[in-house]
Structures are given as structure tokens and as C-alpha cells.
Image 1 (cartoon, one colour):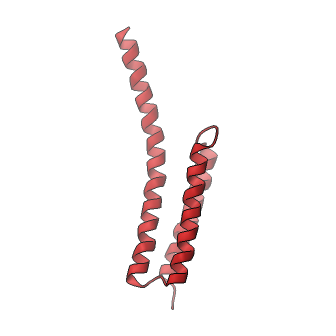
Image 2 (spheres, rainbow, N blue to C red; image 1 turned 90 degrees about the vertical axis):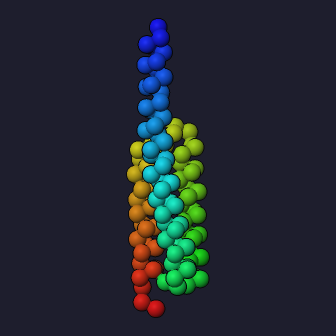
Length: 102
């Protein structure tokens, strides 16, 4: 009986750890992109207009990802793939704006 309870508890922890990993990866990417925007403002590679536009896009993406996580049915593979593609596009936008000729 004790082994059965221990096995169930361990299984629940492993499943929870996998879900946390998926959240953590998206959160890490969001944090990294935010730092890149802030660094661009600080070093002058982004002007105010560019920084504001990137910040609005970043905030909208954050909102969309958080909405997908709490929607009914959980965070599906399709939502995860779409959000990763959105994060990829946002990352390219940040890089392009930080390295453009002024």
C-alpha cells in the first residue's frame, strides 16, 4: 500500500515537473527578450519609438501566452508551437531593430 502511494506521488511530481519545464522555457525566453529591449534602450541601439513598439509587441505576446496557458484544455502542443513561432518572430524583430543602420 505504501509503495503504491509513493509511486502515485512520484508520478504526479514527474508530470508536474514536465509542465513546469514548458512554462519555464517560455518564461525564460520572455525574460531574455525583455532584457534585450532594455539593453537596446540603454546602449542607444534602439530609439524611443523602436523601443516602445517592441515593448508593446512583447507585452501583447506575453498576454497571449498567459491566456493560452489558462484557457480550457491546458497548454496544448499546437499552442506551444504557435507561441514559440511568435517568440521567434519577436526575437528577429528585436535583433533587426537593434542592428539597423541609423
